Image (cartoon, rainbow, N blue to C red; front, top):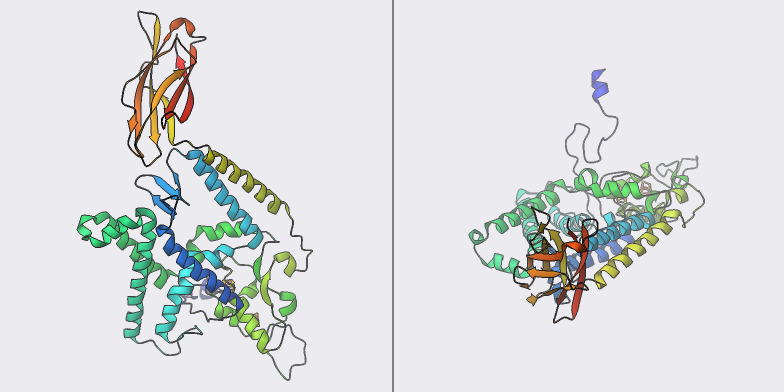
Length: 458
Ligand code: SF4
Ligand code: SF4
């Protein structure tokens, strides 16, 4: 009885055997029309991924995520830690794009563009098939693969992983820095070397062992996307009304059957090991391999294509199909707002950032001359790649005296905090407050920013 209770009726996870051991998946390859399209997209994205750190826009790298300096260059635009608003609009736009894309096209990212899928299906799996003797059709090798061929396969994996790890790191340390690292001894840059080694090890672990489990049990993004789907989103689905009752083709059988001949090829093609005929599942990465597999079978048995096809839950269940729904109107509108806010903020961005802060300690001092002194600090960030000298002045208040307590020249990309002493007649305070306008001029007065400072007094 206990034995029965402990026996699961089916696979708990598509990647686990019933006894809990790993179920290795060797998907069969069906080179149908979707495979060919995905292959074109996949190779294009691989080339793009390798090329991006080398490309320049506005003489800046296309993408450079300099974490140590907290500078992010995206499509040639440099974002600094002070660009909170810009980064917020950028991230909101990215998230809204994902929401919209998922609402319209389902998990298109997972199947067509995710680096995990692309590298596994178009780089590592072809190498595996080459060494395991299943090139062109995939599936489980019929013969045990000799150890020497396995070792050679892992050797090639290692070389590929090193190339990809170097490309990946180029996004974070720049191509020129990476070239320097490669030419030098690892002891001259031990941290970089350790990061590189860890990246290669992780890639080897992922692409030679962990594989589809990253999508089915580890990736939060997959779960996140599943939540964003609705009944009208595009999904890979099996047409139950056409396919059922499924059954093998039999010349003697008189009972009418559906179009599914229960050949199991869609299951054998699946890189995550699921059966699309069980309905929409979290493990389905929408790679379309089951669609190609089933279409190939339908051609052979002379039945219409598309038993497994791109559809939506409503469409496949014969419900009325309404493409227009609140989320496909609201998401684009919000996206438009967010992109507009980002663009306007970016266009109005100056070549320098200013933040005025109050000094610690006494908020103000009253002098013998009946003046109120406020100690302020002005934080200047030179966003440009050239040194710059800034002019500071008070505007519109003749009774205000300001003393700048440090130099106002900044090196390229330098951040400097400059103390200011601002003195104002005591009589000019109303309710203990007085506002003054501080103007900062740069680029030979061609650029200016005005900051209103709140002074405290008696
Ligand atoms: S069910 Fe089909 S689309 Fe989904 S992961 Fe498996 S093969 Fe790909
Ligand atoms: S490939 Fe098509 S016909 Fe074969 S089992 Fe899958 S759905 Fe049925």
